Length: 185
Image 1 (cartoon, rainbow, N blue to C red):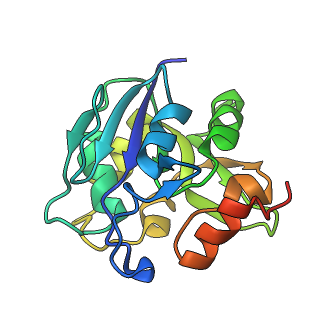
Image 2: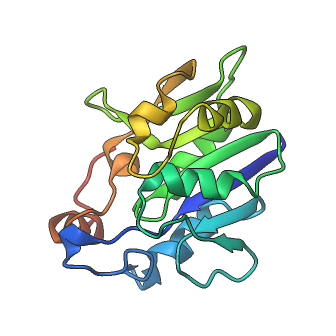
């Protein structure tokens, strides 16, 4: 499968007291390094003010304009037929990436991960690049646009992931749970 990756690594980390999530360590490895390891072998575009050897690094304009704007900035660098979108703050991307890449899209525009509570994890998806370009182009602006609104026009399938795979680190409590491995599934 011809897949490029957008790794979102440019948030403020507000619920972590302004800590750079990309640099935050879990099990002795930065969250960005964990994300890059999970997508090893694919061409990667990282969006954020980070160093990512081996990847193309871009920044959304203006900085901190939100994940939809970051996706737009990363998409400008994608040449592959499909784009895998992942955030760097996902504790166990290595458990999610293979599930997304193995999904049969059929005629759908893409696939989105769904947690055990049935919630779509909007930043964990595989999408046909041309379909994503179409929804991005249809927006008057991506600045502060909700990701849900950006992706709403897409016809996507859902793929279930476990609680462990769905854990993203937004708070210190999340970090503690991930570090302790206190998540089933």
